[in-house]
Image 1 (cartoon, helix red, strand yellow):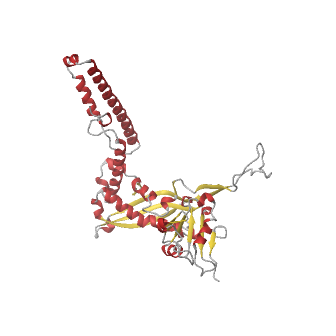
Image 2: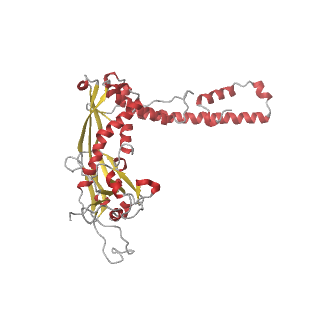
Image 3: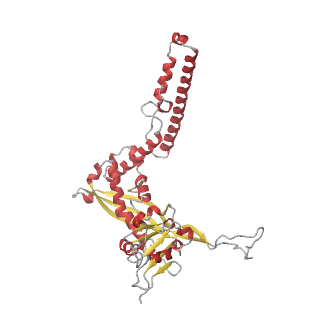
Length: 401
């Protein structure tokens, strides 16, 4: 008999029918041991049927819920053509493909030709289409498309006004005397701790793009990859740049425009004294331990080459050769060309808070590119970002001597 775990519902139903069709003459001629074996096989087949029917009921319930919420999915019937195992994942994959295909047809100007299923899968906002979750999630979470965004704490919140992110109390935890309101040094505890918070609003990030009309005929997978590369190069890169040198006026405030002083910055002896590995180690020591343990080092290629090469006056490398120039004292080095020369930032990237008050939306216009067989796209999102300054340190050159 076919293994229990590999038999489909249809096969199990047919097997049970075969058992039921065994002639009485054959049953009467079977030994007691043969009858016991047959009975065990029947029990196993009935377990398969019961198990698969339970799975089928769960999938049908999921389908009904999804349809009620406006999400279109493909169902897998209990008919032997599709096994129930893995059915839910297959439906999720089909959902993602349907959303991307609907988005593709919208950009190609085929909205009026789309069927109801495709229209329901398309998330519209006015005349623009929201980028499908499959594409948006990869943009936000994959290290292929960003240096900092995929490491940051990303918040999707469309509520009006600013939101506040609590980051710390003004005082640290302290040991106390049992049944007492004071600590071991007889210092009274803070009655109303002051909570430090970061405020996130929203800035419009706009980008005009153009793609060939041939995008309409691409396979869904190829189209998805094209949109990922396009949005990364045109939208995400602008956001990444603001994390480093954003002015804070009409855009997020970047690391370059935070307040730097002796508490969070390590400077060389003079403007002509190059940065040494010891300076980086000194800046690392300025971070509280809870941020230092997750810290990364950010600098441009030229600075990393000049600083992380050899220890000054020696032939000893400033990094572990087994890791190449990817880590310094266990901390990952991130090459970012938006950072100025002779500047190094040491940050806990999880303390970069990014709020999308409006998801990335794309509007298409075929008329403007008619003569060139192109489609003009307008990408728009409302986003803000803020660094926790307590989780940032800087290394730079000293003052002019």
